Length: 228
Image (tube, rainbow, N blue to C red; front, side, top):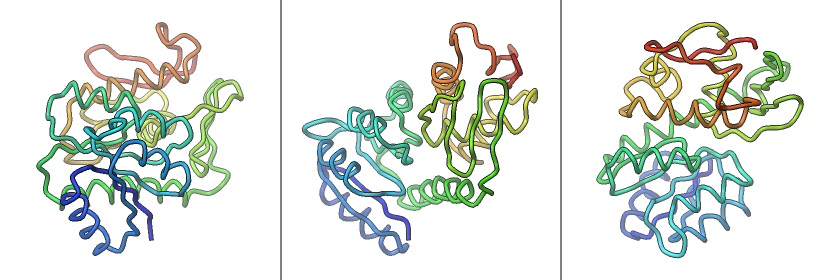
């Protein structure tokens, strides 16, 4: 079964999440601060990590950024804050999803299933499932990406997004459509979430992010992928 790391300094909440996820059949390991989150993420193989935003030693955002230096494991952020800016900062730091406290444990389980399902679907793709457009190339089985032959590290959401665009070059997707197709139908999030991920993809994949050649905007409509 999938292994999940849950890190939160609220021990009662941490115990409750662990109990509920283990009842679903997941293998759950826990931690209580950001430094422990990074240490455990580095030493163990996890299929998904849940991080609280406000933690001692280093906070969830810093922990997320440090984990992103060596892993693309899906990361879900938990926070008592509900401001859109906090969520956008979380996405900038490499988070794949965001849940605001207080939350319904059923929502947490649903988000976990969605992220793990996407990862499982990608792993089941044939090994030859490589997509190439100009200097960009991805392997949907390995969840790997390259630009001009150089490996590029993408988060789970970033990979899902570029895979969708590369499978349908020239097709314009609205922000709402991308939220439904990449984040999942019914996802409650701001359209700016899509903008943040598009900008991060441009920074990683475009020769000049300020003047993109691949990931283009159709003003007033949405985003699409084009051959340069």
